[in-house]
Image (cartoon, rainbow, N blue to C red; front, side):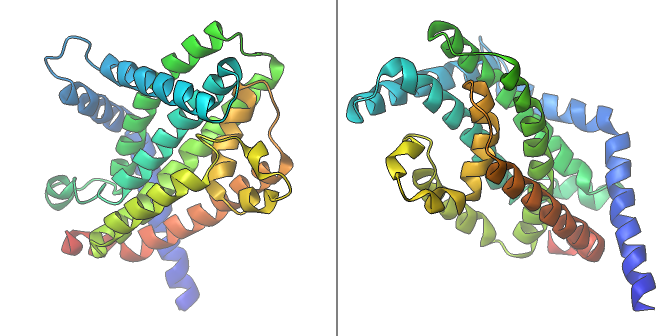
Length: 268
């Protein structure tokens, strides 16, 4: 009986995901409307995202290149890629803690797949990421970043990043709805992780202590997209860590969605 119940719960979770995917036009439209609403009646609209990121990357790049005595042409593309994708990851995790709380009205009034709200939030952040990538294109052109066939490796890297964003949204969404302390805890962890991850400093500074990098999952996620975009190759360790986290994360997301899906409305 226990096995049959577990199979039933798993099927319920998978059906929720299938229903959410089939309604891609709905969460796609809602995610885009979130962006338009945020920049309603502004002159540049969503491109304020690009402008603010461009100013921030330029300021940080010039500052830390001077502090670390590194050539600007070598450091600015590095910090641009790292900071743009770190912004995506940190924003996704922070918003994940309240993804169901912010959709409380819809969840209580309409019969919709719960994972649809995670799809909506991830899609919204991918749109913001696309706007920020304009900054990276400009930096790559100015500093003649080496672009070749190895750059195509960024495609599976982006796909894995999006897949992990979804399960993180689901798991953190349930945790944040049940325990309201999750959001500040995640925020504090991300603040610490920013300084422990090579975003404003280069990995070469940890010569002989690479175990520190290998133990940091954020480093592997950033490296998965940064290495190809800067003309390098992704290490096997990074591929292995990210794939392992993806499998374990989705197993956790399915378990949480199947077991606690019916209780979510009572937590909101």
